[in-house]
Length: 166
Image (cartoon, rainbow, N blue to C red; front, side, top):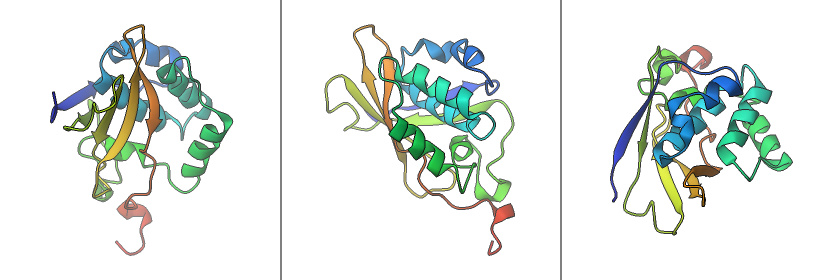
């Protein structure tokens, strides 16, 4: 059960937590869906911080974001709002990390993804990074996968439109 690649497709990016929870992937029965939903929630942050954090808290279930985690997210967005968009298939520095609907997020596992029982560590490709970024998920008693940790907001290559050296 390793080395799977799943493409999770969204027709639109929800703007409210209500729209977010109405997505078919929001059932949280697939760890791949929850990893992709993490990108969707983070991509809302530049437009509406509160809705984005509410979406992330849905994904976190019984373990909401701490103040420190909220501050970490806020800090990551101070210099760049394009990092979450870089996870959409086809988003690159050359096109300013802009893609049209449908929005596809590619999520992978590997032989080590399920080493710890009840957890999954999945990997996503950013069009602006050379290495995969990961999301850790936890399976709860209710059969749903919840966001445990994410390493998606690290620095990536600037969009060409904002890079004077490109």
